[in-house]
Length: 137
Image (cartoon, rainbow, N blue to C red; front, side, top):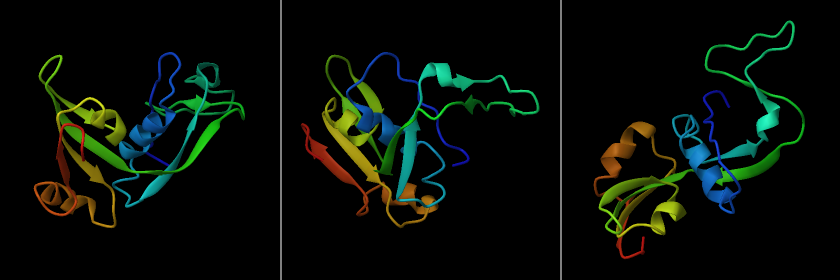
């Protein structure tokens, strides 16, 4: 997808589902009206900004070479905003499960068939919002 997000994961993670949801939710999939999207992971050695002879890489782009890619299919779009109280007061945002595990108050937004332009209006109290205390959604 043109406008796909690039997520760099340092080290190993067991939270590939959260990484995948973060990637699709912050890509153009939401704006394009998709309810789900596919993502893939590639190793650092496969990523290059240097084109082969006869290729062109536009500014801000890169090339992924080789067939070794780990695909995650049909990842649902969804983000959350939470208020974390401990260890410090702060606002956190990201994939729903990641925010749910670290928040005291949370709002989650899941992509449905609504227009992207109506999303901010619905987040202020319409049916698209789930608000909870102490780990509930």
